[in-house]
Amino acid sequence: MTHEAVFQAEKVIPSLIGGKITEGFTDKDKEFFGFTVKKGKKTLRVWVDGDEEGNYCGALKVEDEDRKVKKP
Image (tube, rainbow, N blue to C red; front, side, top):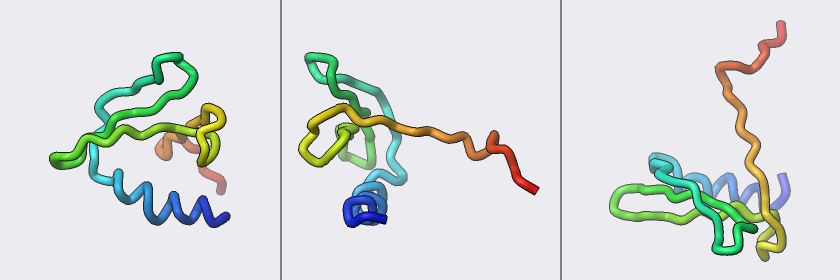
């Protein structure tokens, strides 16, 4: 893992665990996207950026663990 991957996995993602994704959104120019997470009394807006400076729109890769092909 790179330093950034470790930071994301150990610091950022845990702050979202237990929250509920309530909506998706884009910026006003529809170039970037994210989602809203409600956790307790907090509402967090999570932007999906391609890099730390937000130079390009990132992407999510979602896998359904129940549908993965199991290897023998």
